[in-house]
Amino acid sequence: MIMYFDFRTYGRMFRLALREENPAGRRRLLFMLLVIVPIVATVNAVCFFLDGVFFPGLRTIEVRTPVFIVGHARSGTTLMHRLMSADGERFSYFMLYEMFFPSLLQKKFIRFLAACDRRWLGARIEQRLKAWEDRKFAATQDMHRTGLTAPEEDDFLYAFSCASGFWIVLLPYMGQLDFYYVDERPVSERRRLMRFYTDCVRRQLYLNGANKIHLSKNPVFSGRVESLIETFPDARLVVLMRNPYETIPSLLKLMQMSWKYRKWDEAQTNRSLRALAEQSFHTYRYPLEVLARHPEVKQAIVDYRELVAEPRRVVQQVYAQLGFPVSSAFDAVLQAEEQRARAHETTHRYSLEEFGLKGDEIRTALADLFERYRWDDEASQGTTSAAGGSHAGQR
Image 1 (spheres, rainbow, N blue to C red):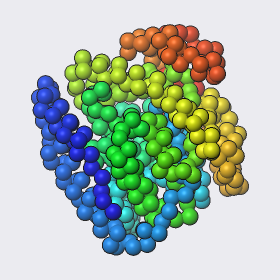
Image 2: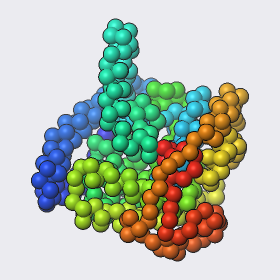
Image 3: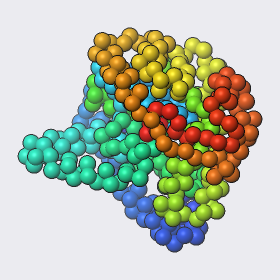
């Protein structure tokens, strides 16, 4: 059981760091690459290897019928994931903190420390961590709710392997670094990447219950749908579709805020935003194209408007399409969600022009999808509601 590390991307990031003109940014990145990444990656690799020694039963764990929720960022993937993860009897998933410590040994040790904190210290450490995460994620909580113990994107598993889209959140190097177009990579490289992912999922199932089904939500996995099907032939796919006048500028605003907060060069930021907009068109089309080539894969295409209006009905429909029954306990959760959904409304508004985009550019690139989902009925060209409708904080 070998830890994965992307040495080629690590080398590219190191070269970019050396050429970085922002002194503070250069020092920050070099410190991450020369100190933090090697230390954490080495510890993770040792613990990952020791899992096979301390937990021999791990070898018998199989990943069966995993469910992958994909779609453009800000399209409702987080909302869909949150709703389905409430079906705790059926699904297993990663919490944010667990992905920075991919080893089973690490996870069990952290859970042991948490139990000691609750028993002997009155949960003081837990309270301090909660206060820290409230401060840390305060700026973006209204756009994307985040927490150390909240379900999160599996892509974070690759953070200290230098293969995660997490790095793009920190660095405006779109076009120079690629963590998205995985299906276009050589077969051997793709399989090595996915083998590590499979090993991580097996560890999580060992921890949460071998009889459970892994549930994953990752917008960045939209670029590796073929690899997911190749790795997990019995996988189920859920694709979220939402008006791109809403999702694209919302994502760009989120990234712009992240890069501005870290004081990156404005010209470099603008180039990366443009590259991210181009990638957005691929994100809308590619999962549908792959699924059209694989009609044998159980799949569900979800319209975001229907999800926020009638979450119970939509989730029940998704379960039917994926071949899962809805338990009475989970149905009660969905009924409560239906009431909560109707009580929430957003206030965020962003314009396409703010990012050098025009409505007709998006309309032309995704013309057939506009026709299919009648998105022209929602907004006039050039104006967008980036998080219009319910659940503004759900991505």
